[in-house]
Length: 397
Image (cartoon, rainbow, N blue to C red; front, side):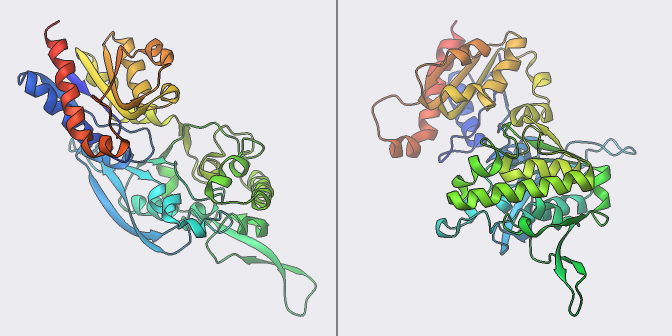
């Protein structure tokens, strides 16, 4: 019997690799001859780098970059063994996987200092630059969890884009353009009058850049970057209005300079406008996070002769059907008539949508009344025990 184990992480408890290991242990306790393939998953958010690095036997690269406030911080990204040199059959580290939150995430900013007028995506640009330095020809970027609403200006600045403001020269009434030397932030967008991309890193032209983006928020408006995400990142109502105006001005200059309209681009508002900035400056492509990850690991090809797939995440609810790991796995499995069992910590009652898209059955790891902290503390053993119970039934059908 061949079983695919493809879970997401149980946030605050176990990584996707740890969840997969616990499920495997439970299955092998029932039947040690079962063929198991573990594919730790993620949807482009937290845990994506380590999940893909573990799967591809890649490596983690540690880099000194700028945090959202422009201060030095240690961050990391992954290099994957995906792709081959033309003159060799040996896999090379040609693909990088980046979580922008490792350099520009909200958790990196103390609560009392959270203000997207003052935060930058410069560090994300530094991660991209380092991947280019390593010779990567493909870069996958997860853009969840940002602390920023700078339209990706900081990211672009780190890669060579230049932003200018207007000022007066001494003893002259003629206005002059002056380069903004500070790291670009949501607040500094108000000063931008001119963009120069002539010194943008040339290597970008020969690199495929794909963005894991599971929201369709536009850049501006009621569902835009400033109004939806600004308050989550510490912006007051007044600051939200300033950010909205700054993004509108910035997008107008981008359209005039680069000929790219990010105002009307679906997903451009993701991560405080970083989605739009990556498209405008790096010619990136926005894709569904889970679809991107599944394609990267060639998931459909790996499951074709499987008898069962076990997936899961910490909380399974009505949102799980939209862009989450469980849903992505189930949709592909359904095409091949492979049963899918999903496991979770907490489970919502109405999950009809999940059953319709391919989930066969859903189980909770909780086997008796217990407090959340106990569930988190015991999650590994609870997952293993559930896997044993499930597989004891499956193997005897």
